[in-house]
Image (cartoon, rainbow, N blue to C red; front, top):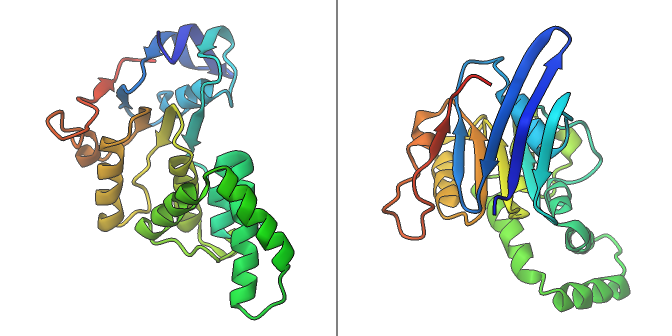
Amino acid sequence: MPLLRLDDVSLAYGHLPLLAHVDFQIESGERVCLVGRNGTGKTTLLRVISGIAQPDEGEVWRQEALRVGHLEQEVPPDAALTVFEVVATGLGELGSLLAEYHHLTHQAASGERSSLTRMSELHARIDALDGWNINQKVETVLTRLDLPADKLLCDCSGGIRRQVMLARALVSEPDLLLLDEPTNHLDITAITWLESYLIDYHGAIIFITHDRALVTSGNPHRRAGPGKIDLLSRRL
């Protein structure tokens, strides 16, 4: 059974048709790369798949309780949250608990007064949810992307903000990961790590990229790798 299916989907903005009678489906663990010139509907297709945009015609079917993570091209708006807190928001309730605990421990380390009672409550709740492994995952992704965990998002550049949203999409480990130009604003070290991360990722991935190295990094002979990457280049 597919994770998601598009049946005869069409979408136009004004007089410009971007999607015309698209039929598409993706299975668990599958990799699909959308290739084509700018303006041909690749980003629009991801927005329809994620549910951000609704088609004019056709149907989008999603498996019940399907978890979708989405990195968009747009830079996120200002937010009075730290980088760690923004990344953790991709984890739902557990992310909120981890973000609050991180905030309180940072206050304590900075010499500010912090509620030891609340920290103890948070520690117990996170422990009950087996959340410390997830916390380590957040910190690992932040380290690999060289992101400043305690810096406010509103003080970050546009490029850093987009990396923050990439980290947010990755740590949630959704069933279906949608990535729109994920290597933008990354240095070589971060790109190499991202390639390795995606090769070992067990969920399905649909991504847009002009980075040929990223497309060819799906080596079917690599241990625990996902197999080949399908290229979807048909006129949408």
